Every structure is written in structure tokens, then in C-alpha cells.
Image 1 (cartoon, rainbow, N blue to C red):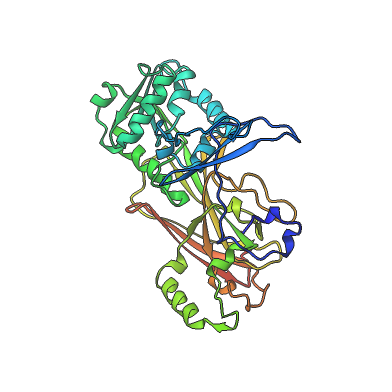
Image 2: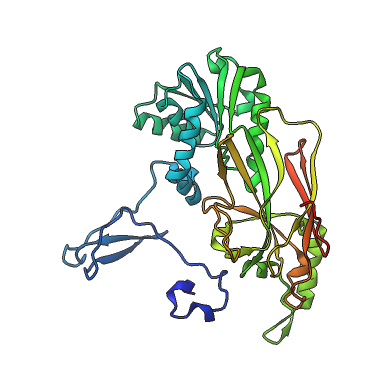
Length: 400
């Protein structure tokens, strides 16, 4: 059950993704030198196990009764590991700083709408006259107040504990917002387009926006690429005969359940963990203009994606890109163009959406054949859902 890189010949290993390893983050970083000796000490009580790294053996120090580490900052209750990684991503932070410099003015009144976001601190330090931030949960409200107090900003940034769409003019001190900010990030989001909740907030806040108010990000776009996975396709592949046992009955049952609804739905996966290579160029599917309110009618896109590399088309990967300004874009999916062989570099702090093509997941199916993937994708403003259908075809549309 060791990770593949712990073996001398990882190419010969079977896929063991369902056997997970455990990572324990030590209380603090310890500089070490090659050849030096350290003691890794394991502790436990009735409920949990924890570890510490010590310079000398605990036997030499006498018996110590360690105190179980308990989170008292509350950040670890609200932010998961990917969110910590996102907040600590300096390149990403620099993008927001540079974008804020272009939209902020000395008399700017800023409102930040994202869960547990540090954008409000950036806006204050970059010279905004007044900064408000909205936290819809009591726990997040308490955490942000602690962070602001630790940075001596408790009287500089106004934290409002309320759902953003319920804001009143009194909450904003009677002022009009000149800059509406969002990463956007919301803890309840599972699929990439769930953060379009920011668009609905912007729409509900129309009455609080002043003349010429700036919305950042100003727009978003949904992108897709067709890929071949090294292993992830196996979670949807029929088993057939397994170690001499015929499990076709289970395969058929699962297929019927998927065909009922889920076979035409995307599911979230952190693709930096699952190697794949692209068979097509990434393609923009839908755009969302945050400078305008959410439209009343559905937004629909139809087209095809031409396959440019040989391989087995396991599925389409979809992600969002947020256009902070005309010159600055933050991607939640591909971070750079695919290499010659199509190897993909994914944002490690976000989950991407994967739509599996059921016809290519059976290992007995012949490889090759399709030259394009046609799609129909639709955004439904009444629910915020994005529905989709992808179909493999032998005739690429020359227009895409």
C-alpha cells in the first residue's frame, strides 16, 4: 500500500488508488542535515494518534506526558487543505494584488464577497478608503475578526455577518459600493461552476452599487478539454471477470443506476492526483459577464472539439477561469498549455469536473476511431446548474 514512488520499479505496480496513505503535518518545520539522527515520537490517547519530532530520545529526557494538539485558531475547522494551499499560493495572491492596483482608487468603497477571503486585507493595504467583507456563517465571522485583530485591522475592516443577498444600505453605512470583490470562493461549492453564486450576489446587490462601480472578477468562462486518463477511468469501468468470478450482474446494475441520471453528469476530482494527457486543445464553452446581472433565459452552447492526438477518449474535463481584469485571468484548471505529448498540469488547489464517456470505459472496446467530440452545454439561471451532453463522433466539425 506504499505510494508508487516508494518502489524501485513503479511501472510494474497495479493501480492502488483505493488504498490511501496518511499524511501527518508536524507542529513545526524542522531543518535537518543528511546523516543526522532525529527521534520521531508517536503519542496516543483514547481517541487519536499524534506525532512529534525530537532531537534526542524521549528516554533520555525522562517520561513526558505530551498534550494532545488541539486547534484553537478555528481556521482548520473552516478551511480544508486545498484552501490553505490556495491562500498560501503566492503567485495567485500576486495576481489579485496586481489586478486590485488597477481598479482601486483612494476613495474606493470596497465590498468583498467570498468565504474566509483575505481580499479585504489586500484592498485595505492597497489604499481603499473603506472596506466591508461579508461572512454568512458565525464561525467564519469569528475567524475573520480574529485574523483582522491579529493584524491590527479590527477597526479598519467592517465584517458583516449576514447572507450577501440580505444586505441593507444600513449595513454599508449608507454608502454605495464602488468596487465589488470576489475570488470567488464559497465553502459549499463542489463543482467548478458552483462559485457562480458570486454572480447571483452581484445581481442582488445592484441597488448598492454606485455609478460606474467595478466588479472584480469582471467575467468568467467555462472551458473543456478531452483527455485520456492513466487510471481514473477505472472507477467507471465494468469489471467483467474478476479473479475467476463473473461480476457482470453487478456491472449491469451499476450501469442502469448511472444511466438513470449520473451518466450525463460531471463529477469533481482533484486531477493533479490523476495523471492524464489531453487529446484535444482546450476550448472555451461558455462565458459569464459579471458586469451584467444574471440573465433570465438559459445560456446554451453547441459545438464540437476536434481530437488532435491519438488515444482513448475517456472523458471531458471542465473548469472555470476568472477574468479579474482584461489582462489578468485566474484558472481553476489547466495552468499552462499541454506539452507535446499532451501531459496536463492542473491547479492543485481546486477540483475539476470530469464527464466520463461511457462508450470508451470498457477495456474491451476498440481504441481509436472518434475524431471529434460534439457537445451541448447549458447554464440554467433559475437553478445555477450547468447541464451537458458529450457525444463521440467520426466527423469533426471544421468550424471548431
